[in-house]
Length: 212
Length: 31
Image 1 (cartoon, each protein chain N blue to C red):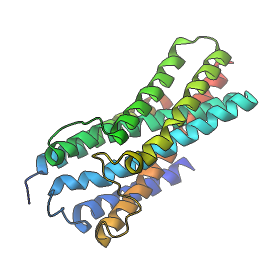
Image 2 (spheres, rainbow over the protein chains, first blue to last red; image 1 turned 180 degrees about the horizontal axis):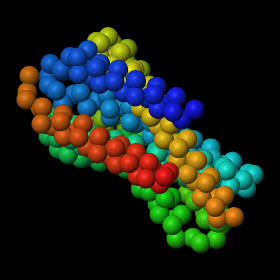
Image 3 (cartoon, rainbow over the protein chains, first blue to last red; image 1 turned 180 degrees about the vertical axis):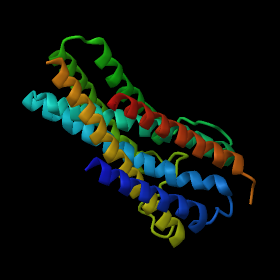
Image 4 (cartoon, rainbow over the protein chains, first blue to last red; image 1 turned 60 degrees about the horizontal axis):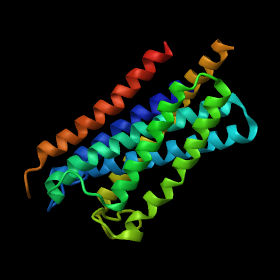
């Protein structure tokens, strides 16, 4: 299954690269830096997927105490942190020439940074608690706290009207070529995240089997 | 149209390094 999924991901990746490179035009006002948009938004969606699956795994562990649930939690959250890092790095690189600053304490930026801090602390906590059950319970609690920040990220642009634009939901905000490119890139990055979560979960399950 | 190509390239390089680095890390751990 992983091999087939990898093939699909490579195909989607090529399609995304072609769309970004040749289909989507450079933005008339921003120039080529606007093309960061596709990987920035796509990575944000992959981040939601990773953290969402991670939190579901954490909840499943709290309810059932199954090590397999913890493996799902750590896989989802680790992949979520990777995509959150991409969002937090590509955002400022795009913002610098457009907003004039690398960073501003806008509601969406701040809440995304908070999510990164909480879920990185989840990964760090796992490294310092030796007892397996205690480690899983404490880290699950951190994951369930962290997931409460996600709705704040989603609704931040509507609630506080900061510097970050609200892109999704505005049908007339971009031409069709840009929208198609965004959709293809989003599907690609969600497929990449799904594949990485499966692989990471298998590694964790293997570690559990070897330790028992 | 402003020349923002260096920033665009930097953004894609950062994306490739972070995602590629994590994939490399996973492949190494899987072996």
